[in-house]
Amino acid sequence: MRCILIDDDEEEADIFRHAIKSLGFDADFQGYTSFHEAMHGLADTDHLPDYIFVDGFLNQLTGKEVLQRLKADGSLSKIPVIIYSGYVSESDQEELTALGAHAVMRKPNSIAQLTRQLATVLKR
Image (cartoon, rainbow, N blue to C red; front, side, top):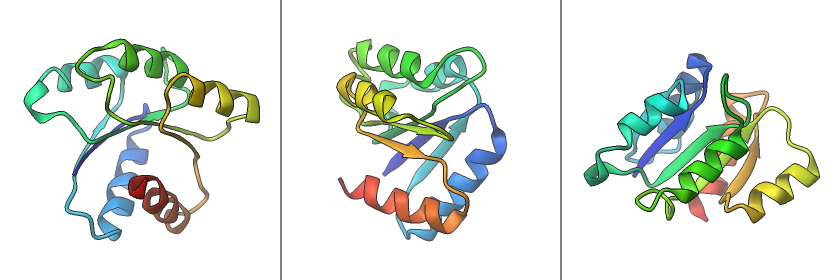
């Protein structure tokens, strides 16, 4: 399984990597600190990820904008996109799901909580 995280906080990638490894998945994980950096990495269509996790609030784009751009890209549109944010209102969650988000995850307070959330999302 190949997963990527687009989050402007580099520490989040380390936390994610640790949580995915603790699930025992044989996963190739890559973290990107910007949407543009991620798009450069996603240009290799022979190695597309199985899941794309996107921070809800990046430096230059919102998670909603990133989701819309990913879903508009023919080679990426079928990849499940999970919005990963510290705060998501109920109405935002509904809107993101309507726009094609596979799931919306709230950033947890612990790695144990993140691990449980990832286990649920990756089993869908």
